[in-house]
Image (cartoon, rainbow over all chains, first blue to last red; front, top):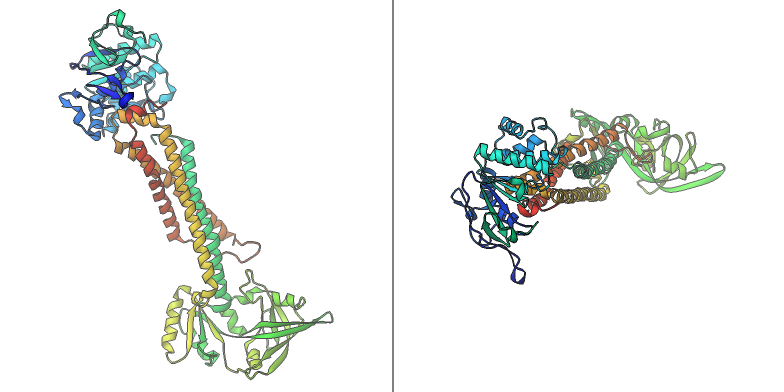
Length: 224
Length: 385
């Protein structure tokens, strides 16, 4: 697929004929420098944006043919999101934030499941706190729990450690890896902190809108 | 509420509340003033039904008509009245003061106090009780150089033959009605004395009929006209008889009501602005909601629901405040500068209508901001700081 922003002389090719496939249960890193197009790619996979050309198939469904309502349902059921700044709804409690994807799906009976998930990410003592009263690391754990609550096929994380110190980052990375293994879920993580993630199933490097399999040789890397 | 922003919501609720309160205050004051004028016209001058003759004076005897009316269970009392214009003069401190074109009203003292409350406007002395006693309206008394109870007033009336008829009366009372709908600009004497002076023995200008239940006025009027098909009687309810006097007031009230509804429209615009602020302030959260699967209609419902809550609380508080003001006005018999006390009523139909209208307006005012919220693209919305 390709993604082009702007028109005529102002055209910018954010993604240029990117093609790859990911298997169920893979833990995939998408790396690249700032502005390389990795977040654009994640937005495409997360159906938050449309490609200019090409298509994205998830579980055999060509998502480019879906209308807005179906895309929303698809995001709700098949995809989980973890954002750089956790993006919790600060007016809600930790538990309410985790329950939100379920409530959107019309399921109002999974409170125990949400509490168990919060316990598994180590937040059993923060469950009823307002989301704006917890630390950045705790907020990111809540975001992970929210991303997993609907048991999505794919969890998409955009710079999940980008706003955290190195100790907290390491904890979050370990948490994501363990959850991925435990639940056999596909994790696609955009990061420019390659070293934080250590060994992963697969790395896709984005450079100037093009995708390369694996880590790029050091002379091609551009530090973020 | 998902998107909790107390300051803005309180502002929106306040806008609805004030809109409703303005309408209630307008209603209490201006409708109250209108109803007070109608009440005083009815109580002092026309009764619930007033009978006149289309061409001349009523020549049926007082007693026969009074008896006829008082056989109807809903009728409380009926009384004859006769009026003409007169000239009056009196000597005060050795100085003769003359006034012309003073309305002179003849009343039947016994029946008048049963059918009218005008006798209650006598602030000094007492109401007409004998053939030579006279109650002077406060304005007439003032124009006559400060006539007081006990003074003697000379009155000139033209009789039916054009002859001057002069009589001297003793002022036994001064009438002063709050709002001026009573006999403030008239002299009041015994009806038989006036008949003598006008050479109209047995004639009556009008009959005012007071009912136990004012809402039956139309039925009584119709029954009366059906019962005397061959006479030239005119029977009118208070509002029919005072239409010319009330017409201007009605337009004024319609205009004031319109101002109230404009106020309500202004509060709807305030809701649009506040809801737009909420949408702009919560753009990132809307983006997050959309990214985790909320459909456009879910976002639409959130903001419309918010509009419903604003409308419901605003309508509730506004109606409660308006009712509080209405109760206060009624209990204190509110009046302005000692003028006539307002006739305060609880118009439940209007109260419910106003509350419903503001509730619906709050929802309508939330439609555009809600629509704007649904149009936000998740990826762009989440970039908003």
